[in-house]
View 1 (cartoon, rainbow, N blue to C red):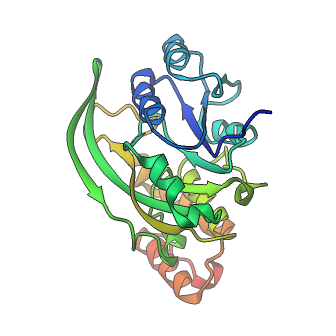
View 2 (tube, helix red, strand yellow):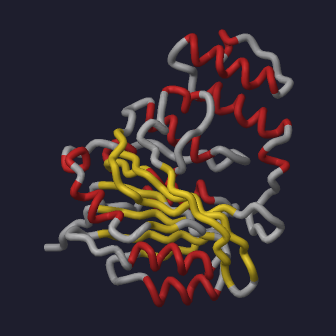
Amino acid sequence: MTTLPFFSVIVPTHKRAILLRRALASIKSQICPVGCEVIVISDAADSATDAVCAELLGKTDMYLRRNGEAGPSASRNLGLSLVKGRYVLFLDDDDAWHPGCLAQLHAQPHVQLSMPVYFNCTVATERRLAQGPELVSELELTLQQGLTAEVYVKNQVHMSCFAFPRQLLQGLEFDPFMRAYEDWDYLLSVFDRAMPVHVPLLGSRVFEVADETTDRRGSSQQATDFNAVLDYLYVYRRHPAPTPELRQLRAALLGGAGLPIAPSFL
């Protein structure tokens, strides 16, 4: 009889084999008393990605190369349809986990009670050069007070800092048509069902690039121009604010960006 894994980790990737190697190595180096399956979904043909997955993934892991439009949402949705673990985690191909993350996570009383949780992270700034990433700085973030009701106004915690019971995610999917903020939109769908509890462990390493070496799809301007305001409005309409105070905060944010809308519509 095959023993089901306790953790399932979904890793969407797009032609970033060097960064993917770091992400997968950080997962496979975890020493944990329970099983962990890794599901990597690539949205493009890439021999370097194939080679990294062949080297680092084990017999209980999966690597799929899907068809269709590029983008992480469809890849994550495919991963969600395949997971078998009791808990589901998401890790972007350019991020990683700290040593001991999964063992500490498994030991948490809230996890033993099958509750959704989130944990601390470090934010690392790096330069992405042809020969590989170069670390510039790294700062630890303690997120004990990081997730509040104002997450319905603006995202607060990175997706890689959450661990969700698989049953809680049943029927939820990432929106593959969103240009940005699909992580936040998905998280709000989860929060409508249950708010995660903070657990005091250092889990993920979130890597950011602040100079011209970035390899992100899209530009920073697209994340701050009027299109971003419309994306916020889209999320607001999909997830009504649960209190009048949050509707006021939403209206203030949009109004400050040049889109005056009455709080009653938010």
